[in-house]
Length: 185
Image (cartoon, rainbow, N blue to C red; front, side, top):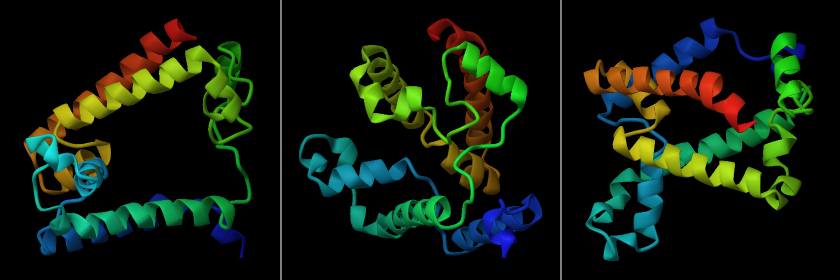
């Protein structure tokens, strides 16, 4: 029964993702999480304020099930299928993060210094979360989708814009972690 608590190997998870993508392509759907934000906003009446939100959100109901599944699956995975709350990361990375002030590195899935309720009392933490959220939201909108939409769905459909977006995501991530992150912390 210990196999339940271990991450699935790539040769199981990869083909399952490919199967889901094949089924979505077969029924003419495209997967992406950021498009659900547009759907939620339209459901709440944003279509009365901006033309961008004027579309038939009911046609996207199937994708809302994906969001519910991700939330429920994440909860089940974290609370019932995991025997450890920490991510196994390289000891050198833990040391580097601790030098930057992340004392929970290697002990928690998310750094308490950014994601605990106490972090909301820090102006620096709130500013990082707000600015980061705005930049991610802007980037996902500017790129026409998020990392999951482009990297999983777009590349599965062999779309050149998705390849360009994914390359941009990786370059941005590398720039952030190697240049900006040390400057911020």
